[in-house]
Amino acid sequence: MNYKPAASIRHRFPGAVLLWTCLFAIAAVAQDAPTAPEPVEAPQAVEAPQSPQAPAADRRGGEDFILRFNKDSDLPAGESADSIVTVSGSTTIEGVVRDGVISIFGDTRVTGPVGDTAGALFGDVYIDSSVNGDVFSVFGNVELGPHAEVNGDVTLVGGDSLRRDPAAVVHGDIHQVSLPFDFGRFEWLRPWVSHCLLLGRPLAFVPGIAWAWTLALGFLAFYVVLTLMFSGAVERCAKTIETRPGRTLLAALLTLLLTPIVSMVLAITVVGGVLLPFLWFGLFIVGLFGKAVMLGTLGRRVTHFFGEGPMRDITVAVVIGGIVTLLLYTVPVLGFILYKLLGILGMGVVVYTLLIVAQERREAASLAAAAASPMSPPAPAQPEAPAVEVPGVDPAAGETARTSAPAAVVDSTLPRAGFWIRMTALFIDAVLVGVALSLTNIHDVYLLMLALYGALMWKFRGTTVGGIVCNLKVVRVDGRELDWSTAAVRALSCFLSLALAGLGFIWIAVDEGRRAWHDKIAGTAVVRVPHGVSLV
Image (cartoon, rainbow, N blue to C red; front, side):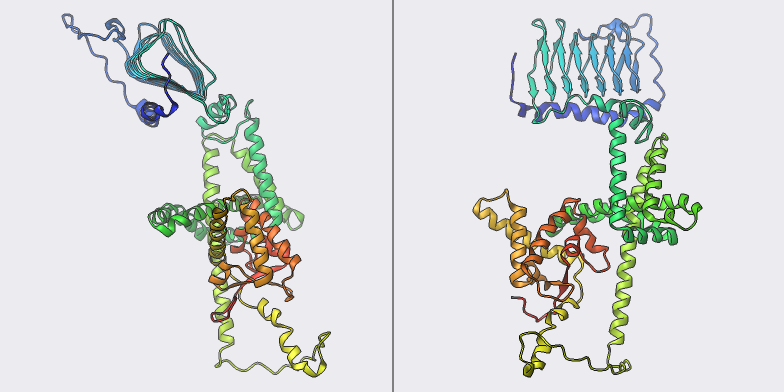
């Protein structure tokens, strides 16, 4: 037995897997094509020489291609076929296969000659005849009987054992690839493939897929918690799709079409390559939030029959909409269509709502600027507020005390920083800390050191290096000075904002006050300092 390193698989095994993957992709077209008429053998025809693996008597009356879904494939002795692909079923070959045979989520048993590759994905392989190509099994076992003769390689990926009879002949090499984790044989996945995937639905009322229901109910619980935490934002997005369904659908289609284009443009640029993971992560978070919005919108179609009251709450609507959706997921074909449709519409409604909020803020800023312009009529005079005594300050220096005490209050009234400028500053800080740690060969405490760096900089400078570059400053919303406790709480709360798929940071884009979760917990905000004001 000749064993070679697992790395040699790159030269042989991927080609076989790619071949059968392509074969499986065109199977749906091939099975609908009319079978070619069987050739009529002339009485005096001279037969061409046959290979020893495929006798002439077995090459007549065969099928071009055999494809089976959700049932086994059997080729009895005396019959032949070009290729056989079985999905969610096992394959038994006693006749002649002129090309190859593969089983996906099933076992392959070959006791007749095969002209090319024989294998299985998520199943076992038994060979007791001649195979002119390779033999492979992914997440399964391989057994070679006494009459096995393999002209190619034998490859076992992630399987438990390779058994070989002493009389079996392998002309190629034998590769056994052990994976770092034990994935098993995915037996638990077979019922879902048979009863759900191949029928076009995510769920079904059949034994063996309790894990799928647990996963679905877990996501529903996540959407309910998300709605409880951000009921106002979910309510706002739900009103958008209820009042502007046409524009929401258009926004969903544009988001679906433009996402791959924007990703491609970013991928071919140096700076865009850095931003591409943030784009995908942001779309992932938007998709999760949008799914909760769509569940609430569907639930509203049911709760409106109960009139005004607790049943009109958006959280109750998400629960009811989620239950209805899970039941619809069990309908063949419609289940997958509904699943994809909710995801596309959910992403579109969140994106469209963000655009509406941004437009409203621009209009409010324009009105405020117009009201403050010199051409506007002067505001009526207000009575002068009484002087406020500052403890520890000489009353004789009252004017100085009154002008210096509310400095922090002035900072808290500056314009709030948006999502992208804050992410840019965070990216600069993350790179800076990463470079510093790489020089010291310390990598395991990266997030902790980034939080410590932020807390120290916020306390002593009110900002970080990234904030200085982007003209940002951290202030308390109550106008008081940023103390040690506030800086520490804000730094620790950043882990909470990051833990739930980074939703705490994404929330800056949808919050009216442009505040992340850690800002809300610590009572802080990030403001944009006018150009020319030193932050050093």
